Length: 162
Image (tube, rainbow, N blue to C red):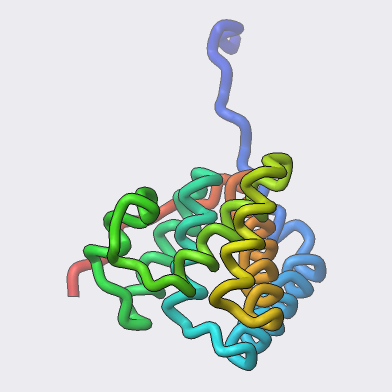
Protein backbone atom coordinates (compact mmCIF):
# COMPACT_ATOMS: atom_id res chain seq x y z
CA UNK A 1 0.00 0.00 0.00
CA UNK A 2 1.34 3.45 -0.87
CA UNK A 3 2.05 6.12 1.70
CA UNK A 4 -0.73 8.74 1.42
CA UNK A 5 1.50 11.42 2.98
CA UNK A 6 4.15 11.01 0.28
CA UNK A 7 3.61 13.39 -2.60
CA UNK A 8 5.69 12.90 -5.69
CA UNK A 9 7.12 16.01 -7.28
CA UNK A 10 5.25 16.99 -10.42
CA UNK A 11 6.63 15.51 -13.59
CA UNK A 12 8.28 18.12 -15.76
CA UNK A 13 6.62 19.08 -18.99
CA UNK A 14 9.12 20.52 -21.42
CA UNK A 15 6.76 22.67 -23.47
CA UNK A 16 9.41 23.11 -26.16
CA UNK A 17 9.41 19.34 -26.66
CA UNK A 18 5.65 18.99 -26.21
CA UNK A 19 4.93 21.61 -28.90
CA UNK A 20 7.99 21.52 -31.16
CA UNK A 21 6.39 23.44 -34.04
CA UNK A 22 5.66 26.38 -31.77
CA UNK A 23 9.14 26.29 -30.26
CA UNK A 24 10.71 26.09 -33.72
CA UNK A 25 8.70 29.18 -34.72
CA UNK A 26 10.05 30.99 -31.64
CA UNK A 27 13.60 29.99 -32.62
CA UNK A 28 12.97 31.37 -36.12
CA UNK A 29 11.74 34.64 -34.59
CA UNK A 30 14.91 34.85 -32.48
CA UNK A 31 17.06 34.28 -35.56
CA UNK A 32 15.23 37.09 -37.39
CA UNK A 33 15.64 39.34 -34.35
CA UNK A 34 19.37 38.58 -34.16
CA UNK A 35 19.73 39.47 -37.86
CA UNK A 36 17.68 42.65 -37.38
CA UNK A 37 19.85 43.67 -34.43
CA UNK A 38 23.00 43.13 -36.47
CA UNK A 39 21.61 45.08 -39.44
CA UNK A 40 20.65 47.92 -37.08
CA UNK A 41 24.19 48.06 -35.71
CA UNK A 42 23.64 46.49 -32.28
CA UNK A 43 26.74 44.42 -31.63
CA UNK A 44 26.58 40.89 -30.30
CA UNK A 45 27.76 41.87 -26.82
CA UNK A 46 24.92 44.41 -26.48
CA UNK A 47 22.42 41.76 -27.56
CA UNK A 48 23.83 39.35 -24.97
CA UNK A 49 23.81 42.02 -22.25
CA UNK A 50 20.09 42.42 -22.95
CA UNK A 51 19.58 38.64 -22.85
CA UNK A 52 21.42 38.30 -19.54
CA UNK A 53 19.77 41.33 -17.91
CA UNK A 54 16.24 40.25 -18.84
CA UNK A 55 17.00 36.72 -17.64
CA UNK A 56 18.23 38.18 -14.33
CA UNK A 57 15.00 40.13 -13.92
CA UNK A 58 12.90 37.06 -14.71
CA UNK A 59 14.99 34.68 -12.60
CA UNK A 60 15.59 32.25 -15.45
CA UNK A 61 18.57 30.13 -14.44
CA UNK A 62 18.71 28.21 -17.71
CA UNK A 63 18.82 31.34 -19.88
CA UNK A 64 21.28 33.02 -17.51
CA UNK A 65 23.61 30.06 -17.88
CA UNK A 66 23.24 29.96 -21.66
CA UNK A 67 23.57 33.68 -22.33
CA UNK A 68 26.36 34.32 -19.84
CA UNK A 69 28.46 31.76 -21.68
CA UNK A 70 27.40 33.20 -25.05
CA UNK A 71 28.30 36.72 -23.89
CA UNK A 72 31.73 35.57 -22.77
CA UNK A 73 32.33 33.87 -26.14
CA UNK A 74 31.26 37.11 -27.86
CA UNK A 75 33.96 38.99 -25.96
CA UNK A 76 32.04 40.32 -22.98
CA UNK A 77 34.11 40.69 -19.81
CA UNK A 78 33.46 38.74 -16.61
CA UNK A 79 33.63 42.02 -14.69
CA UNK A 80 30.80 43.66 -16.65
CA UNK A 81 28.68 40.51 -16.43
CA UNK A 82 29.32 40.43 -12.69
CA UNK A 83 27.98 43.95 -12.17
CA UNK A 84 25.25 43.84 -14.81
CA UNK A 85 22.43 43.76 -12.26
CA UNK A 86 23.78 47.10 -10.97
CA UNK A 87 24.67 48.62 -14.35
CA UNK A 88 23.27 52.01 -13.39
CA UNK A 89 25.79 52.25 -10.53
CA UNK A 90 28.90 51.80 -12.68
CA UNK A 91 30.67 53.62 -15.47
CA UNK A 92 31.51 50.34 -17.22
CA UNK A 93 28.74 50.55 -19.83
CA UNK A 94 28.68 52.85 -22.85
CA UNK A 95 25.72 55.21 -23.32
CA UNK A 96 24.31 53.03 -26.12
CA UNK A 97 24.51 49.92 -23.91
CA UNK A 98 22.87 51.79 -21.03
CA UNK A 99 20.06 52.86 -23.34
CA UNK A 100 19.58 49.29 -24.60
CA UNK A 101 19.54 47.94 -21.03
CA UNK A 102 16.97 50.53 -19.95
CA UNK A 103 14.77 49.57 -22.91
CA UNK A 104 15.17 45.88 -22.01
CA UNK A 105 14.09 46.54 -18.43
CA UNK A 106 11.13 48.64 -19.58
CA UNK A 107 10.10 45.86 -21.97
CA UNK A 108 10.31 43.29 -19.19
CA UNK A 109 8.23 45.45 -16.82
CA UNK A 110 5.98 47.42 -19.20
CA UNK A 111 3.53 48.39 -16.45
CA UNK A 112 6.04 50.91 -15.08
CA UNK A 113 5.12 53.78 -17.42
CA UNK A 114 7.62 56.27 -15.93
CA UNK A 115 10.44 53.79 -16.51
CA UNK A 116 9.21 53.13 -20.04
CA UNK A 117 9.02 56.84 -20.86
CA UNK A 118 12.48 57.63 -19.51
CA UNK A 119 13.95 54.60 -21.31
CA UNK A 120 12.61 55.83 -24.65
CA UNK A 121 13.82 59.38 -24.01
CA UNK A 122 17.32 58.17 -23.14
CA UNK A 123 17.41 55.74 -26.07
CA UNK A 124 16.46 58.43 -28.58
CA UNK A 125 19.56 60.39 -27.53
CA UNK A 126 22.05 57.65 -28.50
CA UNK A 127 20.30 54.98 -30.59
CA UNK A 128 18.69 55.05 -34.01
CA UNK A 129 15.05 54.07 -34.36
CA UNK A 130 16.19 50.78 -35.92
CA UNK A 131 18.43 50.11 -32.91
CA UNK A 132 15.63 50.98 -30.47
CA UNK A 133 13.29 48.62 -32.27
CA UNK A 134 15.91 45.86 -32.38
CA UNK A 135 16.74 46.22 -28.67
CA UNK A 136 13.06 45.93 -27.79
CA UNK A 137 12.67 42.88 -30.03
CA UNK A 138 15.68 41.24 -28.37
CA UNK A 139 14.04 41.83 -24.98
CA UNK A 140 10.65 40.56 -26.18
CA UNK A 141 12.24 37.40 -27.54
CA UNK A 142 14.34 36.58 -24.46
CA UNK A 143 11.29 37.22 -22.28
CA UNK A 144 9.47 34.54 -24.29
CA UNK A 145 12.38 32.10 -23.98
CA UNK A 146 12.60 32.83 -20.24
CA UNK A 147 8.99 31.82 -19.82
CA UNK A 148 9.48 28.63 -21.83
CA UNK A 149 12.46 27.63 -19.67
CA UNK A 150 10.92 28.70 -16.36
CA UNK A 151 7.65 26.89 -16.98
CA UNK A 152 9.46 23.82 -18.32
CA UNK A 153 11.96 23.89 -15.43
CA UNK A 154 14.84 23.43 -17.83
CA UNK A 155 17.76 22.21 -15.73
CA UNK A 156 21.15 23.88 -15.52
CA UNK A 157 23.72 21.14 -15.69
CA UNK A 158 27.28 21.46 -14.39
CA UNK A 159 29.86 22.09 -17.08
CA UNK A 160 32.33 19.31 -17.68
CA UNK A 161 35.99 20.10 -17.12
CA UNK A 162 37.90 20.13 -20.34
